[in-house]
Length: 152
Image 1 (cartoon, rainbow, N blue to C red):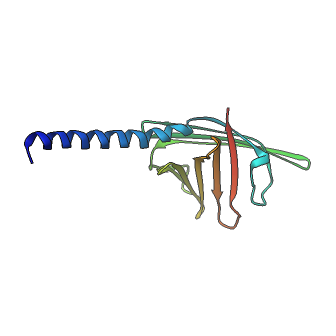
Image 2: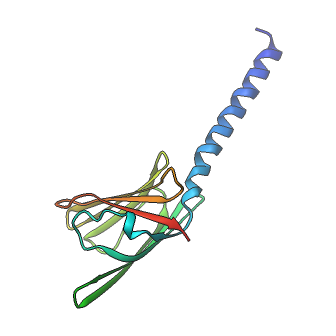
Image 3: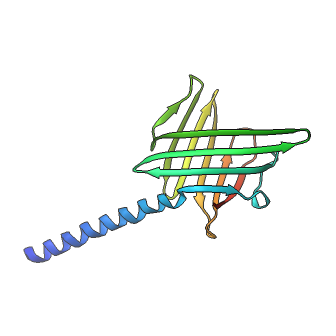
């Protein structure tokens, strides 16, 4: 094989790898933004239904921030809670000795694993075919929750 053909092949290969990596990483930014809960599409796995909720995701240069705000309303009570994580992809964030959380990309799914008092919860954020965001929550001793969100 001539040197000219080898150089041409090498340039083509490098370009293909570069654009493949760029296309793969760009999908991670598709989840960036604020998402509003659609309770009527969501399955709460037997847990009290959420009436309102937002999730804000910002993935910038492998640093991931996720903020969640939810409101439960039941008989004679209303409970709101908010949580947020911010850190480098795949780094562990500790809040005291009993709580640890980690966010990382698993293909086009943003996976957040949190451990508190030996119990591990896994949240998976991904885009649905219709452009909504789907969040599945797996917790020990509970059925899977599947929540749908629309972009605000």
